[in-house]
Length: 412
Image (cartoon, rainbow, N blue to C red):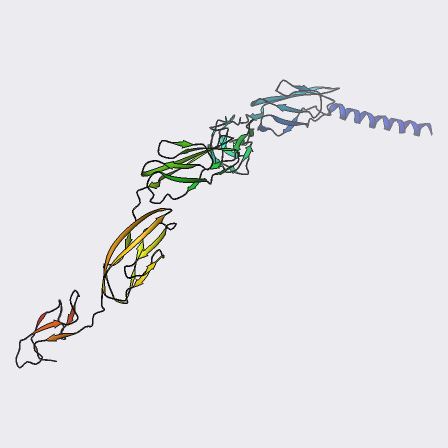
């Protein structure tokens, strides 16, 4: 029995000795990996120990001035460049060292920046942006602008028109050729104010001679309060919203209006030769002659706002602007157009000749012939002061009141 126990203990000791010999004989080999190994600053890298030989201690030199005794440390690389990393692994039997040169590569991120030619104004406001970003590593390959009003651009140096009031914060995001991205937002917004639009109408002074008074109506729009500056074209001005001005001299005048808002927005309008004092001449057009009972058209050049009165010389009148008038008797009529320009009148008179409607007829000095050629004298019987068009039946034609025609072939 004692011999059996002895042999059992001897076997256990032998197994333990073999295991300890295997552990002591395993070679310590330092090793590691990392992810990511390349990227843009600041780059966070996570290291993984994969040493063999059962190390119990680790000493890292991460190449950026940072050391660690953790088994799996991490490090942040702020400066661009390449970094060597060293690991010393150790256990009770000894140490081993691994050094990996140019193991980590860090690219410089770009530095975004821009300038603009305006910091504010009235819409529509056109702002020119100029990129002054630096690439860091590589080159800048893309630009992404956010103009702060819901619109974007990918141009390098864009211009943008703001069409509504806004406090627009502009952001530029740039990417370099290594994929590094940086954004910059302007610290001050672009302040876009409501714009103004100048406009006005005026009364028609008609053909009245000076002094003539004109009323001006302001139709300008914009966020108030607004101020006004009128130039009436005769070296006089006004700051009233809806002024009335009296012109002392006959002539043609150009009127300007400048409108300014409290935010400094300005707009101007200039109407060239819009005021005519004592210079308009009434005129009308009509044919010089017509026929009894046929309509004659008369056309006035008077403005639409002017009242007109036609006097046709046959006891009839019309207030139509462009009347159509038939005359019932032949004769010479003096037609007058009277234009009333708000109390000032201008009259023009023209003469129109009305004839009875002609009745076509003619005579011929011969009707039958025995030999050719045969000469015939024709005479129109419709009257004088008329135009004639003759067709002789053999293809020939003529004009005039009394043509002579020679027939050269037989016929009727």
